[in-house]
Image (cartoon, rainbow, N blue to C red; front, side, top):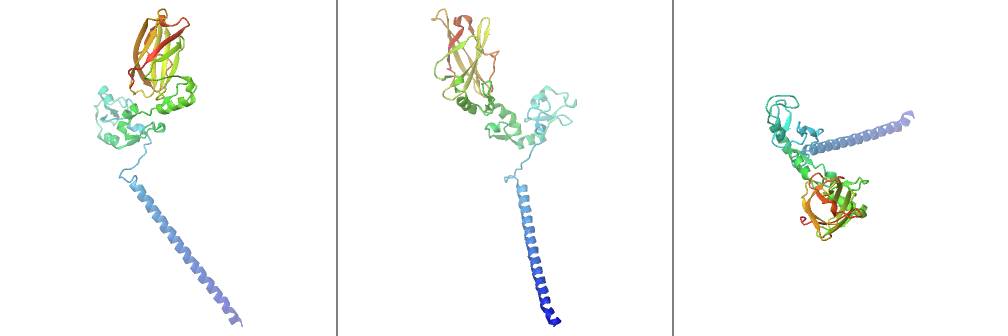
Length: 302
């Protein structure tokens, strides 16, 4: 009776053992599959890292970009680049100024071409510092200074003193039109613009109706009359153009004075008349009401 009664128990234990063995094999199989997948994933990531950009080039990050700057003027190195006997790199302009002594280490040896740095300068690609203002240009590091000196996306400041807006000149034009439209006198380059300015009024903002460009007219009172300058807000490398100012004699309206100068661009408003390129309007041309009236023309703008 006991032997017979014990047989089912053995069968149950055997069946459970078989099930446990089967589950163990399945788990082992799953672990093997996961391990294979991880290996394939690691291989894939390794291949991606190795191929980098897919065109044979690699991406690097300069933790200290100044390592490619001249050790004297601290501007981006250009080709040709030179170095002293201790490896301090300098640009060609500074090399011509200081031939006998390195200002960094006081080495008296002459400078020699640094071919290795030149190859790096040609190979390293950088983005313009004005990327956040819209510039998408990428160029070799040796061209960094040249590009950024003429970049059309150089940030320009809003001429309203209380406004901190800064953007490219085109974005600034749209901002000013939207936010400060009534703060400027509107004019057109192809038409005569009549201006009335208080003798003691220091500044007048003008906005062109067609392209939205902003001009700043500065006025300063001097013993002989009013010193007037006109500038445009924009990259300093923008082309200058001619403007004419015509004032009429308060005592004799048939008598007039025509002056002309250049409109130069600046990235921000300047609150004082320039020391050069200004026009002097004699005191006799100011009204008895202490107002300065004159006409502006822009024959040099195309």
